[in-house]
Length: 140
Image (cartoon, rainbow, N blue to C red; front, side):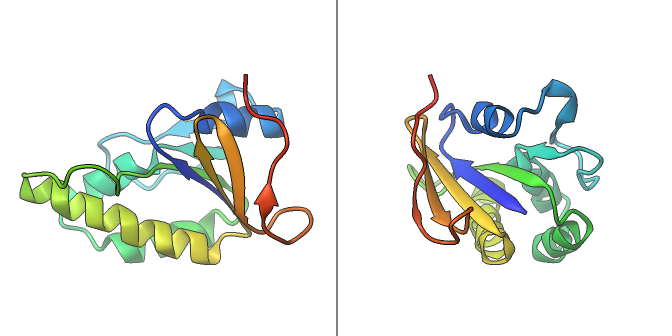
């Protein structure tokens, strides 16, 4: 599994599509639905699935672990919502915490982890050489 994370509008999906030559038909975009994402090569906005599960009072960590077992070859994209202001609303604070914990689980099990910042991908774990490093060539 490849985990790609970063802030809003940093080019995460564009990076995944360009890197693997995938198209829009290869992407499942999560929404406010508690159904586990499946059936596509790229799972985008997994943070929205986590929000739905948090609001439904589901066991997010268990669902994320199950998702990883069922989708070992997926490219998973998550918006990092851990930076910035802490939300006033209790459900959004719980969501923020759940996304952070899910990212820890996902990154721990992922073969490769890439963080995108300002459109520039930085490999934090794994990759072709098995080490850390920065990919050459930012997205246009």
